[in-house]
Length: 552
Image 1 (cartoon, rainbow, N blue to C red):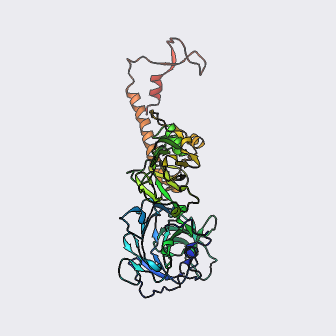
Image 2 (cartoon, one colour):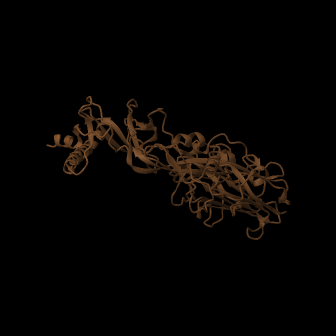
Image 3 (cartoon, rainbow, N blue to C red):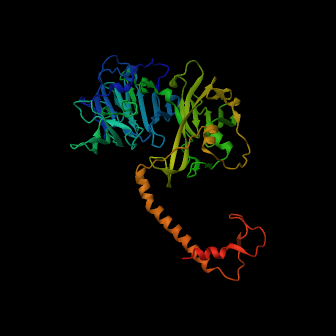
C-alpha cells in the first residue's frame, strides 16, 4: 500500500483536468455525506478502474470530492510530503492483525500547518475490506454504514486544490485589463491591488471617460482570462496545483496519492532551516543615501557561504542498527539525518530528520527497485537578504525616508539515503547533491571573529552576485512638482545667507578700532595692483579705509 511507487505505471495526464468547469453541476450519490468545507463533483472522464487512471485524469464511475482551494501568499507552490508512515501487522499489536495504517503529511506552505491524511484498512476474507479515511482529524469517507470503518461501494477520489499568489500586485500599470467581455480588442493599463480567495482579482484600470480624460476605474472582481502582462502581453499566470487521493474499491491497499498526476514518492521533502527554529536568520545590508556604500552585518566568510549554500559535513555516528549524519547547508541551516531499525520483524526502516519521523515503511512502499532501501528527498528553503535603503521618487532622486526591501532566494538540495542491507545499517550511505557524505568539505571547528563588510554596490554585485535594490515611492513628488516644493526652502535659505552677510559687514565695521594695527593693502608709490611686501608707512588703502568706504 502507501505510495505504490513500484506498482504503478507512468502518469501522462495531470490530475487537475478532472475538475469541473464553472458551468457544470455536482451530483451526490446516496450514502455519501460531504463534511463542511468539502464539495463533491462527478468525474468527467470514465475508463478503467485502475488507481493510476484516476491519478492521470481518467476516472471510473465514482464521486470526485474536492476540498475548498487552499491559498498561500507565496508566488511558488512547493508541495512536499514532510512525513510518510506505512504500518502493517508486523509492527506489533499497536496496529492489529490483518490491518494496515498509512499516513501522509503534506506541506504546501512552509509557514502553514501540513495536511494530515490517514487511511486505515481492515482486511477480511473474500476481498471484503473496511476502510476509514481522514483529513486533519475529520472523516472524509463514509461507506454503506455509519461506523468509522465502512465497506466501499465504489472507488473513492478526493482532491486538495492549491493556489499561490501572483507576482506584480500593487505595481503601477504592470498589467493590462480587457473589461469588455464582448469585444477583446481594447486593453487598458491596470494595477492589480488584491487577489481574492475565489481566484478573482481587484483591479484599478486607467480608462478615458466621456470627456476623454483618463480616470481610474475600480473593478472588484476580474477573471484571470481578462488580464495580461503589459510588457510581454502574456496571459496572467496564476500558480496552481492539486493533490489527489484515489482508493480503489476492489483493492484499497493500492491507494495512490499523487501531485498533478505524479506519484507522491517524488515529492518527499523537508523545509530548511528546520521548522523548530524560532527565527530565520537573515543577512542585513545598509545602503547609504547616495548609494555609494553598502554595509553588512556579517563578514566575508559567512556572506560567501550564505550565497553559495555549500553543504558541509559535521559529524557521523555508526552502529549496526543505527546510522546518523549531521551536516550544514549554508551558515545558518544545520540538519541531522538518521536511520534506525525500530521493528525487529519485517523490513520497515525508520528515516528521521531533525529528530522527527520522516519516512517509515518498507522498500516496496516507497517504490524502491531491487533489494536496497532507497529514499530520495529534498531540503527546500529560502535565503533572505534584508536591505535598508533610502526611498526614491520615480525620477530616481533619493528621499530622506528609509525602507526595508527583502530579497528571497529559493534553494533546493537533493538528498538520498541508500541501505544495501536492512539488517546492517552501518553500511548505509548518504548523498547530498550527488556527493557522498564522506567527500563533503568539513565545517570549520573553531569560528573566528571577522569584521563586517563595507564596500561599494558594484563590488558587492561583482564579488557576490548581489544587486542592491531600489524602493520607489510613487506618491513622492518628482519633476517640476519636486522643484516647486523645494523653491520656498531655497528662498528661505538664500534670505538667511544674505542676512548673515550684511550682519557680518555691520559687525566688522563696528569692531574696527584705532588701537588695532591697520593692514597695508597697497603701496601708494607702487603700480596699481601691486601689494606692499614691506613695512610701508605711506599707504594708499587700508582695511579701515575699505570698511569706511563701504559703510552705508
